Length: 161
Image (cartoon, rainbow, N blue to C red):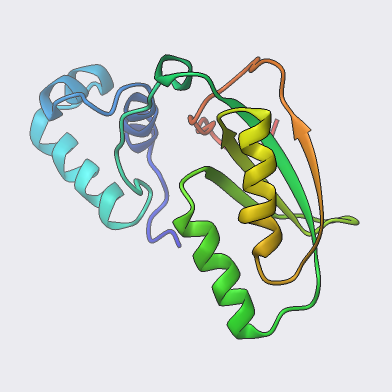
């Protein structure tokens, strides 16, 4: 929920932080054309209002050893509130599940999974995914090559084209 409109300075701060969150307040202020104190105050407000959810280091998956990204789409049965909570809790606590979305169409859930190998993934499907409450069907798409990866959201003006 937004409490104030983003100013052009706020947008410049967010754009710079998406490129490099390790910038000091002084470096950030220089890059966005503000003095250090106003930049720090704007940065604190952006954090307090939830525009900045956290700051992390992005790791190179390939340097950490062999792995592949697999998208699994899941067909679900109707769940009770308790089953839905258990499903969500398990998804959140499983580190190999990088992202999870509800989707429109014949399937209900899409998972982005970091898999070590195809045999690892087969075990993961049988020992984790198919044991989740309500899972009726799983269809998987194995990626061959990552063509684009970014965590940066478009910020200039509206997010429309």
